[in-house]
Length: 198
Image 1 (cartoon, helix red, strand yellow):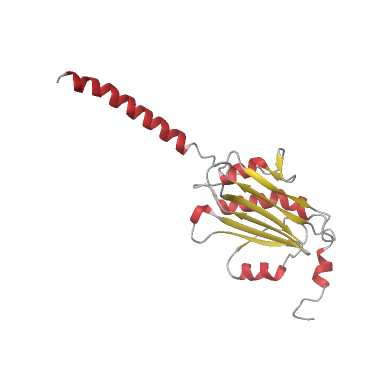
Image 2 (cartoon, rainbow, N blue to C red):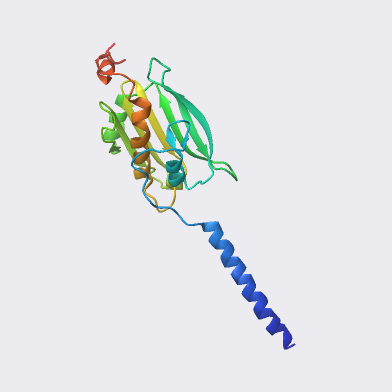
């Protein structure tokens, strides 16, 4: 009878050490450092810095699909880039869309509704960004429009403790100049009659 407590103590100690080690591996250290201020390789989808994707989503081995064609739609460009979790449920962590259907009126409506304005990242551009109101998954959203080109960033899985709104703003600063800089003068689009006036 006296030996059982003696044997149980080392076994219990080893078990607690094993459990605490496993918990440390599961939680991992969160990288709360800000996004880089300039884009550098490696890139995913040719234009999106992989380091920014990792920081924003916390996914260190993202599965990435998509591409951009900047010459399509009369130079407005089209395409998308989506990063998924590399394992498990493979949930969509981040999606970037380049569309030739940029809608300045939609941007102004969102700004009037309380979204934060983007700075003029590209000459003649207008945009907004915000963090999801329910805070679920640290989701955030940003949209920039210049002429008929629009860039949309949807962060579906952010990192707890990071400022996801600042992350989508930071990513927009990194990629928008490359994706929409060649879209021509926005004044051409502004001079076009709107559907309401035609």
